[in-house]
Image (tube, rainbow, N blue to C red):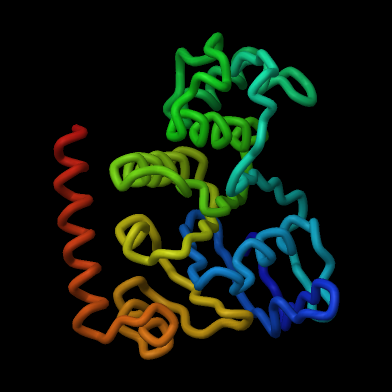
Length: 241
């Protein structure tokens, strides 16, 4: 086990954001956390990395656990000239071989001299992924890392994450607000809305009453969305090969 939470609750100000969260993540698995806006998804990741303290419960990490984090968004001053290599060297320059390996694993080899502000949304997210991979993490956290990307860009990014998982043997926790986007690239789904509503394999969660209640889908509609998106993504995947 790499990381687990035990009766984890987080309060921000007077508001209880998370209540009694129990989860366990094993090496090599991809876990997707879904839920509506304001459900506590990002707060859960911040609690896992220690950016927010629980008001009760605890987070237990494996000794020496290394975490890589890809944020939901990162604002950079558009007037600041900065190459990808310089961005990847903050706060300290990596060894050239480590930089090359991280860029290759993220699928952005050859962009080192390009200006950060000239990157497409998909390229920038992969550069953020490369930066997270510099430390060769045991656990990779992605906070809605495909927000703003189109369906094809999202599918390509998640394929890259699957490749990273296989290459590094790391665990991945991905936050998303739409289950059908990551359905084919995850082992387990945890649906939260302040607390854990349901969890399990993607197809089971998509058909659960709790999921349908949160996202407004009945059983037939939920599976129709899954099958349509699954087929659509498969078609894109074949076209990209």
